[in-house]
Image (tube, rainbow, N blue to C red; front, top):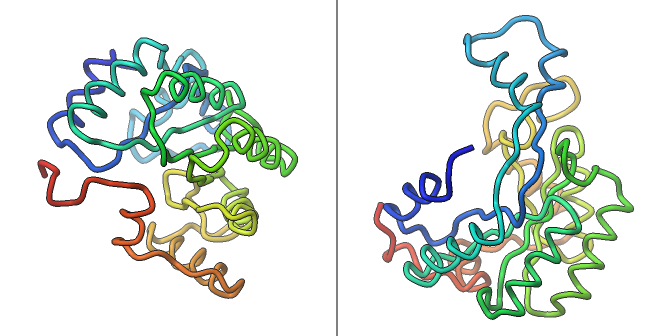
Length: 221
């Protein structure tokens, strides 16, 4: 895990509309995957997974404040505030209270990562209820879940009025035992599910308005 300066170098150069920001330091364990497979395509894969047993994803209060001020205030970048556990919601509330995070801010609750909150329906409800209590109407909510919980949790979040995220970063599968061909395949699946439930899908312009983004004409890429 690099320093805050190293991690900021790319987004400061690109000045994106939105950037992910973890709301706390945490263990981020992928090492159990190393025991599930025998054949690896690249030499780095196995040691990378095994090494995650000794990795701390660092985001201290000072790190977060610096990112909010340099990338946020100076570049107009909004953030996907990634919350892997309940304490991360309270960390975010701290910065909201200090006016360093201004509404409408975007909260991504994350489930099923070893080191964060587990992918259980009661945890989903508790995270949502906690965010509602802390932030009221000032936030926009989305959810992602790792592995097999991806589609069920996304569907449940939508029924609770939330937004959803899917993609190969979160799950390599489109259904049990079948690898997804692309991010687009997963997006297509969740779109079909939501439209069957009579939910509408925001356009890019509508999403920018909902999230109060600065616009694609103000980035550096």
